[in-house]
Image (cartoon, rainbow, N blue to C red):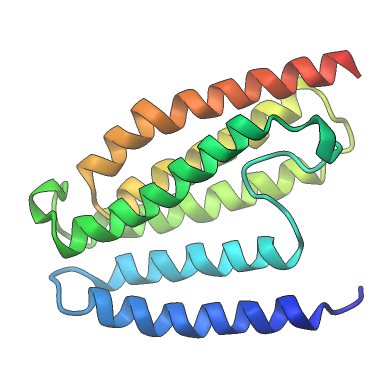
Length: 182
């Protein structure tokens, strides 16, 4: 495997910057540590996906021209805004924290790691069928709901339930139809 030095340098910069930024951002608040760990695990995974040129929210076994760019854009907007809302919950919206303890962020880390594991496992499957697509989007579901727990946020949970879950279902239906037309 050839090393892409530009992407590697960018990832290193993002990791170092994020580690410092989110440490300074979250540290002054109560029960911040495991939400910080959650944030760094999420960023490390996103950097890995960027380095490998994967869009984490769509299956890579379809050619680029077969993706629905509207759904793709809406999901990206949802995901990154949920990340921001999670950080905002800790910093400004304290009343939207679910229990304000370290229990839920630890659960969020576990769900995030499990979602990443399922996602990677779905890419290694030899058969590209509706079950593979289902497993892929179940893994994305684990990842988006892990944010609600990782940031201990009612708001992110409701946001993921009302916006993220329907977007996942729409994408899953879209790729299932695409697979049947191949």
